[in-house]
Length: 276
Image (cartoon, rainbow, N blue to C red; front, top):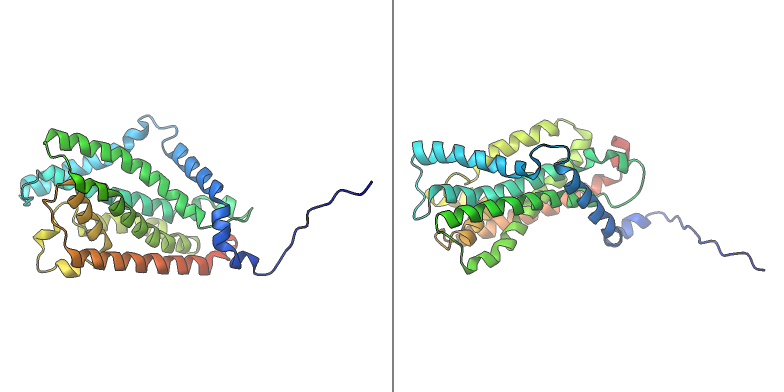
């Protein structure tokens, strides 16, 4: 009786590098598992659970409405000021949560990095899922406010996924830089929240970018300006017209951020296990 055939394990130098993107597709089930795990533990053992996704934007909305809407009398055109702010908070929270999750993905999964091989790019990609879940919850709050003010969106709502994708790509590009750097320099755990807090006020969340006509072209180099204005165009029925140079610059900066982030992530990926 012939002996059973034993499958051969071929160890080939450089195979991982040559088949990296193919492996990324082969490990798609692991991507789904990591995403589901991140979502499941997001609000585990919390009293309020998913309500935390609503508390932060609701408090921020109240503060912006009181300070900028009531005290500073920030103009909002035909749109109720709280609705203008909420349409800006939606993409900002999506970007902020996605960037935070992607930036911490390698440090929080360091036990997996040191034990088994899989494309490490799966970790920041899986972190985006939590941001999408929170985004869906806050989007529901927006529609409640839109119904209250009788300001429902029109056909432009169909382009909302495109604007959301642009925000996620910007967060992923920056997140790839930060997550790779965080393994070597743990200071980035403290730098990222500071940058996000600063970015909240440097982005047109509490005001319309139309209030800065002389600076709008330069302001467009902040990629979140195009994302926020795109959201407002989709949600506010065209009362916030698109500024095409802004969209072009925002898309270019986002693609540059994503391309350089992928380049640096792949360049340093081989040494991740040594930095754990």
